[in-house]
Amino acid sequence: MKVVILAGGKGSRLSELTKRIPKPMVKIGSKPIILRIMKHYYKYGFNDFIIATGYKGYIIKNYFRSKSFKYRWNVRCINTGINTMTGGRLRKLKKFLGDVFLFTYGDGLSNVNLSSLVNFHEKKKNIATLTAVRPPARFGGVKLIGNKVKFFREKSSLDEGWINGGFFVFSKKIFKYLKGNSTILESEPLEKICKLKKLGAFRHYGFWRCMDTIRDKEILDKIYKNK
Image (cartoon, rainbow, N blue to C red; front, top):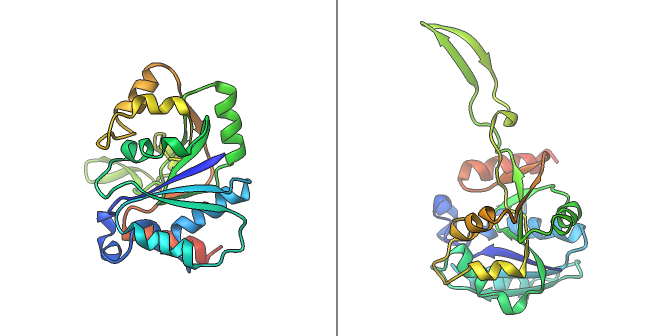
């Protein structure tokens, strides 16, 4: 089963780093985040990767072409354009993909059980299945009466609602909803599939983090250093 990784965006909220390199090449510890994502898929036996590149995509392509890896995997980099949106990037890969495939973003890390995710998708017979996660909490909860704190609690991720954590499984029927380069996967396509009751949610209660900002990168570096 093939794994698609979106790696073409400009990563503007990480511009301090992405002026020189594409976002998926930003390092967590000593290795690019995209390599850490791929190692997680490899752990579950998925070793056939298609990387949808765009912004500074040649850096990603050269990295996998010039490095010697100990992993028995197949990596193919496809230039999907600098300004193409998420659904448009996937649409350009149609001819390389089979009936069912995995799909994720090049800036998120998780310990989601990918075998269970695929089994869930196949059992439910959905067009698309996303991994639902609770985002890390950012603020503590405070309730005031006058100028006194009546209630205080350090906020937990359990206080947050579920969000799309990426780590999808798609059937080839997804391409019916991808119309052009400007198609945003997370907008009209998934909304339509949701209305058809063919969008599944695999709930993941374990580790999940995305890297949108420098602060996110620093947190991931700290987590990595602490093993």
